[in-house]
Length: 179
Image (cartoon, rainbow, N blue to C red):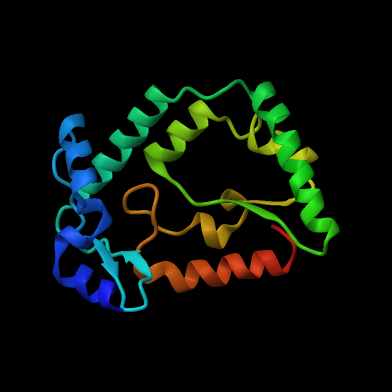
């Protein structure tokens, strides 16, 4: 509770504004962080409020960050990626053999973020290929109309106001064992 109160009033107590993060951002040429759209509640749950005035900057920054990520982190080929997931499938089987249930969920993205993801990880060659052999339940947001229709102001995150609708839709899909 004390940390939450400090973080609400002192920007330097928020992790994105810590000394290490500030130095890393400045060295990388990223400038100071902009977090005016992140809201932290007293229970330390956070959400994004996209009613702030600089949504165009947030959108452009999100897309630029994803472009830089893919430029600096080339994906492995689909066959290697799928082979590497054999170990993950063994973990899933062990969990499920003990009565657990594993769900892999592809969160909603849209616009340029979805385009970049598809260029680098085409669904058919990556997600769908693993879904065909995975012992886990696989849920891709695109297969669930209630999830694929959520507005994503920065192409990657839902607005805090949509969290209840998102949560209910996802819980319903999980309860039914997938899309």
